Image (cartoon, rainbow, N blue to C red; front, side):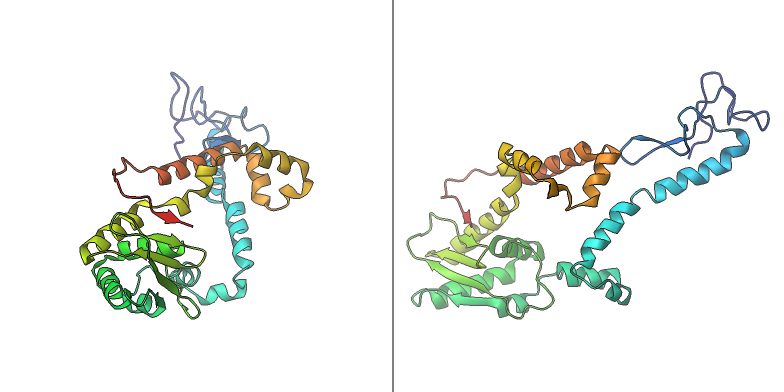
Length: 285
């Protein structure tokens, strides 16, 4: 905190207990929040100068506000987490252990992946295409394996417990080298056209997992809908879902965070020039 704030021509130190931090000081009992909004630390703080003997109190008060500024948001997150994870269990886990249990493993273990992929290919293609898929996954980097999971499953991490989870690989019999793979994330299924070679399969699959991101742009592509706004206005219980929403309104931050979410979605959707291709578009359903 800069306690030397002063008006033009002001000095950096006060002459006595009744003087401000600087003569003609502009420092008052306010602080800027993380969003840039000016917050009064005491009643009428916007008009009350910080006196020299109050400098330590001002510093500690401002610091306390900034350090606890997001306590309400953290508490809301903790409350939400507690709906799925018993809060009494949290002290038993490190944050890394909790992250793995909630979000899954960061590294995609190829042996685990092989254990959940089920061969549903037509018998005529089964042995040849499946061997190509295994070789392709072995050559993939961890980042590419995560993209593969996201393309087929809709999420890029495997859970610690994969019992009951399976990803099906099926034959897209009517398509060939001119088509890209298709996926069905609701059913964890990957449809592979009848490719003529390993090289074609690798090139098509790499392109699909890197550039077919429709599963991540549902809301960005949908955009604001007038009907949704009218429906929300007609139901009084629409505001019961989130105390955070009410706090954002009271803090005047609702528009700020809404714009941030829109910008983030746009950045995810378009990240630089997209490569051109004459191939049929890949599909994610």
